[in-house]
Image: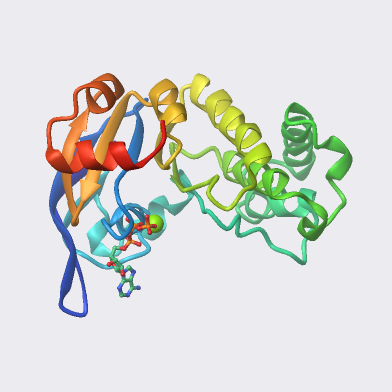
Length: 238
Ligand SMILES: Nc1ncnc2c1ncn2[C@@H]1O[C@H](COP(=O)(O)OP(=O)(O)OP(=O)(O)O)[C@@H](O)[C@H]1O
Ligand SMILES: [Mg+2]
């Protein structure tokens, strides 16, 4: 699905991504871990066409460096730490806006699907409220639904639970597991290592703008190879 070749990114002289090359296949569930400032968000932002960069990124063989990203934007969903819902739109309006604008289906079908999704996450009674009256966990689940409504080929998550209180984290992680079970390709930056063990088919450990380890969760968590990963895992509870 993605082919990344010698991807580098420089912010005013400092190189924050250094020659990253990797492939991500359909159906993979990739978790990215690594210390703060290692380039995790920048990497996701490059995959999502939100940054300029050196090197090449192909999405389904289309070179997105050539400003072609617009053509595939709707195929790549993105969920941010800060939810990014439209505060002036209701829940139902938030999740139907893009499919209606893109005329993905008849309005009747779009609303029907949106209501089915809301029912699945037990928020059917919230369709007419504004995001400000939702809890953080509810907002993030609505943000995930909004992405699902676009029928993306892949969803990128940047620390989707790190702005949430502890008791709301599980409801978001559970929804992500449900999405995964349906076969969605997903790339998730998270510090929730227990979730990563269960969820991921593959874990990338980033440090200093490089991918230092790229392996199964079992290998990453039970047999870390680099000193950097050993130190990182030692610092973070799991
Ligand atoms: N817009 C920007 N302008 C200048 N420097 C930036 C910009 N965005 C990120 N950086 C720098 O790039 C480096 C990587 O940042 P990035 O946000 O990708 O790290 P991260 O791994 O996501 O960290 P965190 O775990 O704290 O979210 C950092 O040194 C950061 O200061
Ligand atoms: Mg980040």
